[in-house]
Image (cartoon, rainbow, N blue to C red; front, side):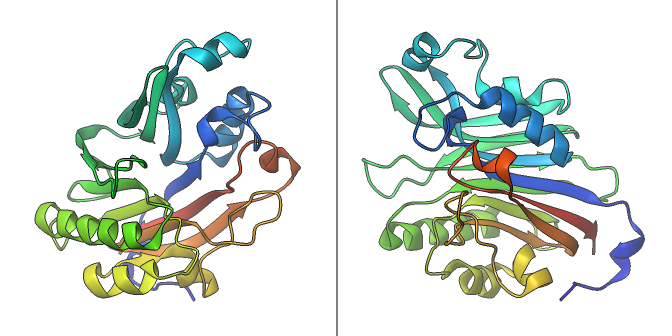
Length: 258
């Protein structure tokens, strides 16, 4: 179904979410960050939610010719997305990685919250407030990468809900996107009940999109949830050019203010 309302006459907001697998191919054999940058430009999103973004990696820089000198989120932005935020989550001897948000609109403020459920799996919540011309108040954009184990995901979703209730006004437009690792599809009902969020593929196609593994998607791990928007369209980016880049498929959606 399509969410109906007065927002259909407002300019569309195009968004995308993608677990980029640290800019490496499925089995880490090839560096694909350059091709990945080109494919992101094809989506032409106004706001991009990225997971597994490599802030730095000394070993990869030495191993792969052409490894970007700058952090991956800056390399991917490439002047197309003028504002960006990076939340450093996993830190190790040779580098670090986390979530990132790229935007064509000003990021007014941002914060990164540690929501790790145990010491062996570092996870974060990257929360940005953006000034979007079509909106009469700041847009709250949250990028997530949740735990592999269900018990950890349950705790993290509770923390996410508490964070949103505490810091996001009920009437404020909200987008929550990322890799939820929610293969049992528990999150949609919980987030709808607790926060009034709608998943864009459920809204347009009746169920979350299959996005993993990218070459032959069997699981709906990646999601885009919204509040305060109509969902005009939602798409999974498949095909040969995409499945060579990451183990996850990229998602995109076209939204109108409600």
